[in-house]
Amino acid sequence: MNALEAILAANDMVAVLGREVQVRLVDVSASGCLLESSSRLETGTTGRLTVIFEDEEYVDDVRIMRCLEREGARAQYHLGAQFLWTTSPGGRSLRRVIARLHYGAIRPARFEQPN
Image 1 (cartoon, rainbow, N blue to C red):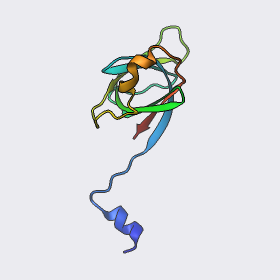
Image 2: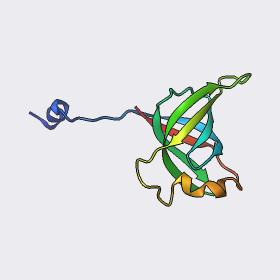
Image 3: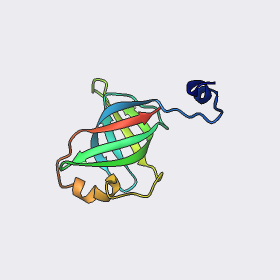
Image 4: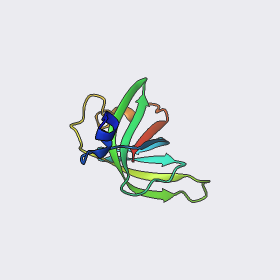
């Protein structure tokens, strides 16, 4: 059996298929954030949210708790995202810079969805 056959035959094989979704950070709190996107995401979707602020990248794992289509907006959705405690927030955690985010400009964020 070659290496590829052995990998494919393994019972504990795990694979992740992801996609990147552009979002705009609308609001943020200690427990989560409100995102705006042209992509609809299902409730329960988990992923990694990356925000660039003052040339620094901040990352947190989130779960989409709600997805509402905006009235009067062409294919725009408001996504309510909850921060997940998959790891302890590090120095580059979005949760650690909430106060700074309220006082500065924020570039578009991106949401990576492992699927």
